[in-house]
Image (cartoon, rainbow, N blue to C red):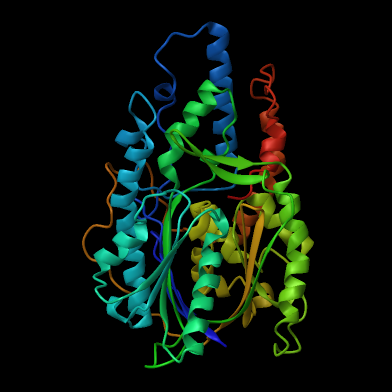
Length: 479
């Protein structure tokens, strides 16, 4: 059965899908139109007890390397609910899980609600039309989950079937879409309509202080703090049973999910007394690249009715989760496609970084915007799109979408404040944002080589103490 999707996005991003995929919007919240995610002052990340000169040199060297990595990830800016002087980043200790949860359920839920409202608006549905809600996050573990509070604030008083997915990290956006699609198909089998709201919410910036403390106290190069950002995405999925819904953005034609055997230790997001810690091995980019081709081949085999001119990877546009620069370039090489095929992935990575599960919906939303059409390979937009994301397991999620070229975007003008941060943003993007993506992509591809040379000049006399920085950099790509 065909499914329909619609997406909607703002700088704070949100998204919504339907089994046609009906509507999505993504909210990557920033205090101004856009903002760089910044870390707390380095001196506040050090414990108060005195250090020997040698110890201080080690600390400064480690922080220097983290700052160097931050400059060379290829990410121009990342969105966050707070700024460098946010109270959580400037206490005399890292915040507890309880304190992190409190901020997540206040500021994060507000983002998710706004994302859902935008998605519902474009889908021409009210919260009372929703029959199912599928949500995901890896940056909170409250019970009841954040989805309970999103539904409550949206005013959903009708019976709604809800499911909150956890433990799937960056693959959560597509895993939620797959789950929503199966729920919608089940409703179709029973002759019932399905209007499924999908919400992905990640507030990664809350973990910056804990990661910096680990870099200091454990003498580790914590690379996660250089990649991740905050985002809420929502989409609406419908099975086309019952009342007619709005014209979809995408039709969802099929999907695939699989696990790479014996890779549980390569990628994860483990619970820590002060939040969560990214687990990332240097094998991840190669593992991810190796599984895309067979998954794509198997997905195509389930879709015999595709037009005959859609056979090779380069015949499609690609919405790939931008886990990192080498993930993008690795898949590009493995599938013999160009950066233009993944233009929305590069654009999202450069301008917003990695927002874990919420990112892929942002990419799909970005792909349908007019300025992205101008960058299509050969100037021709593809009718069919391959969506792909990776997560802990290592899991791969892939789906096939068909554009609805007749869809007219409906924009919801937000009123009032959307989870304003504690202070003004440290910086904002220029008016020329995104106007030269091709130049940015070329710059991004050069970042890796430049970073390697740069790191050799940053306190080379300080040993890595068992966590090879070069290996860490090679692995900075996913969750």
